[in-house]
Length: 336
Ligand SMILES: O=C(O)C(=O)CO
Image (cartoon, rainbow, N blue to C red; front, top):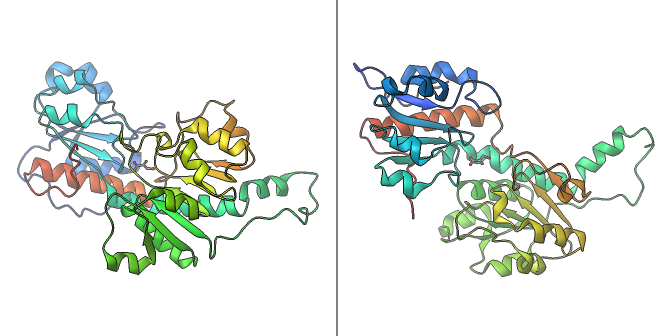
């Protein structure tokens, strides 16, 4: 892994950093451990619980990966020298920012590392839904299939209108990709992008989200989950969309009112949905969304690439070292 930070604390013992565990489904990738150990003395939660008395004053940072370890008041109270929580990933809705910062602890995230891989998943879901890829795979592997029925047709994304809700770094990368597919691009964002940025990707700003919903063939959600964006897309918004439109969600499940979505899909209010995120994750096996032919669901794999995970670890390490060395912090998350 690239050692771009050059920030290890020279001449000092490596700072102790708490991690959930190494390996397993939710632990740190074993191939990242060597890199992390160049900068930190890693302490797993298991070691911490076994030896709290000796370790609690030494821990300066917590490296959060896959929402673990869980940061609760008890953990924060037990770490008097904690300076920073380095989240590996951009979304921090699993962290109570107000609580954490009330302990004088900073929070950082990794917006740069995740943007390409998450934008790719957005495009992959849009294309897969438009061209009925999952259904097509099932047809191809079905023993009864000789040829697809002549009226078994998908639609093209070329020249269709894509409405991007949330034009941060991921949304912007989606727009760049969509431009290459000759899509017409609309976007809604709290803050309008600079004119030259809009021109670069050919995106038109919709101040009013309703205009975007009414005009788009594909609506892609790329916002952070906050109290303002919780259930941002509900019954009213779905009813504004075209009956031929597809909803793609690559941010957080709770941005959509899922019951309203099920109803809209059942009643033909919209045509289809492609979701990398749901609530809960995973959905219960008997959930209606898992049974609909016009829905594609992936298990939150936006950053599940070799490259993204490597860059997330590197970006998180840079952030943590910047805080511990009292240097400008590349990506600090400030509670609103
Ligand atoms: O970076 C994040 O927050 C993710 O959810 C990755 O998909």
